[in-house]
Image (cartoon, rainbow, N blue to C red; front, top):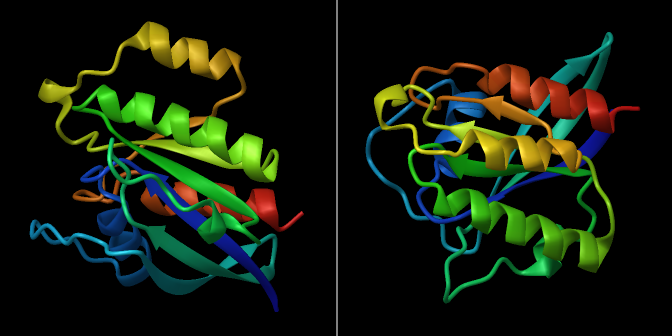
Length: 164
């Protein structure tokens, strides 16, 4: 069976762990769990009739003090950049992470997840900034770990990208 390492990256509190729990265990909890270092899960996805084992690395969030360790990314086939749709600064953190990844390990497939789409009244991302990043090749999905919206689809899309 094909195995592919997938990393989840983003600022603190954007919902990386909640997205993984929704995808792997089909559950959601309002309890905030801080990831220390990295938490690894596995789920088998079916891509065009073939099973692909996704080894999912949920990497601790980044802020002004703590940066993602590039060593965690070694061997990754692809990654998900997670952004909190209610906090625009998390989009800039994701852009910074993406630039560092490209500089350190080269181009790799990724999808940016605009998480917390269920909080539509609190949405704060500038459409112009999203359009700018799309023109640079970014692919966006609006997700909600709470409701499950587009979570399975996002992982399936990434699995299809790496199964080629």
